[in-house]
Image 1 (cartoon, rainbow, N blue to C red):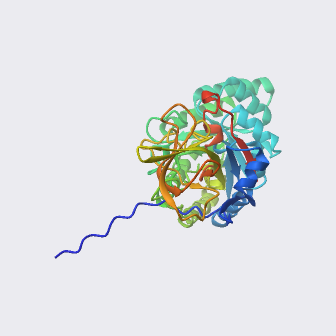
Image 2: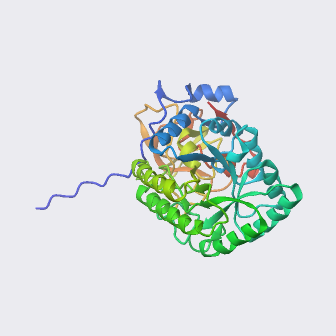
Image 3: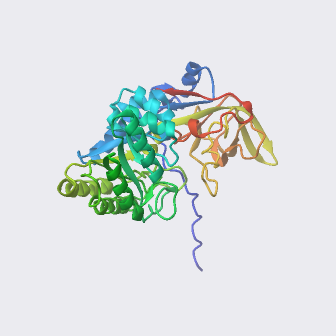
Length: 416
């Protein structure tokens, strides 16, 4: 008689152990969720833990070679207080709009440590960036020609780096930002001609920007992309108007959102960057190496918290109806790039030590079935007044959501 196979265990989320628990309540920035809600005037709210951000930056520094500079990509979370805090921890800021540029300049960071990328920069944005003295990652011949006109008008040359669309992709990335046909950057094979035009127009060429993809949890894929990016930059450097002074190798570092995912192993990435730094010192001796991270610096340090306002049972299924929803946290609802919807890590934040788990769905107050924050998850038994917490919410949350949808109030935000 054959032995029956053991029952298959449900795949679990990575442990959300970055926040302490006190008397059954999650603690963020030294405050329980209940106290935070009172301090902020109610729910829903986003809270970002500055100590966790500090810890993440320190952890990265421990793995990065000293020659590799760390930049924060503001698009991940442009909350001014958070950006100002990070400006004191990182070596530079990367922006993607005039609005983000204003936030970056307000931090007081040296404008020479700010770079500006984006495939559709307006004439006004280019003009403001040149006036500020930031580095522009040019993404087309149009931008180069406009920058030549602006430089002639203002009396000093625009600082430029060429954003390169490489001839490879970052394997296993959540979003592929390079390789194949893309709206981002200049195709690698077209870069030499653009470099010749930059030389002819007298712009201040500084280097290259390569960003192959984002949200990657496979260290080997990131290592491969960084190696290929460096090799491509070396080939292009031979045709550059002047020696390369800045080489931005992008980012791509991911965080675990969904069941079965694990945190990224930094050790092999650090070892790869050490090798690149050593070779760069020989072959690109004037170049500053940069990695550009957003989500990885802030994503795990943030939570979104909403309050249960109703508990409903429909044909055996429990629904926890909350005062938050997709209008506040579009990505947790699965409507920000997911092909097949998967749950973010969710918990009842004021019942973290409860043992009475049940299957429940967390939904918001909006009149659409898309307003789903957690689908049939095992959660502590919750009643009206309890607090639902969504982890991994420090990036692409508040600013990436349609907050005006259906006219509900916007959530609070706090850096604690």
